[in-house]
Image (cartoon, rainbow, N blue to C red; front, side, top):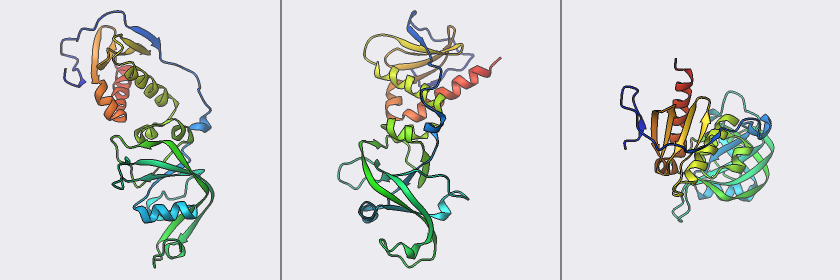
Length: 243
């Protein structure tokens, strides 16, 4: 079956009846502060920079790459490229920020460079190794981005760090739960308003009543979870506002 949304003028797809449904959970799992985007995820260019950061307890980034004003930053997470040692690209270290300052590049003497370019230097109180690491499955990270401590603590793939709020986390978690049930030869699903998301072990189906609105493969979700999540979320939002 072709992955993607089924156009409304096509014949609806048939699904076996009586899947096991649960309502999409509601209510707060955590306070809004837990999802505050105050963790800077910054890329490390090479082994030289990584060794300096780990040994001296700091991270630096050009001020021009940041926003107009430095956002509140409680932690820094180091996003490492693949160094050819078999380890996957991803986030491996997290440090709590104890000081942040705007300096000239030449003032960072642990990585000497004769430049007046403004940089932000973050001093951390030590680096904690993330176990397991948050690996890159599909979406390559930008030079830097901000995420929350909650997502750092509960994510296994870098795509998950792009979730923006509790509603997105709940929806993503339920999709992952359905994907984990694949191969159990049962049909599971959940309600989202008047719509349902059903998984038959191989595909997710978004439907409203008996009408199938979209179909997405579980395998594609495993390889690119955030991309499939966005398409399902968009489809649920579109049907929520449809007449």
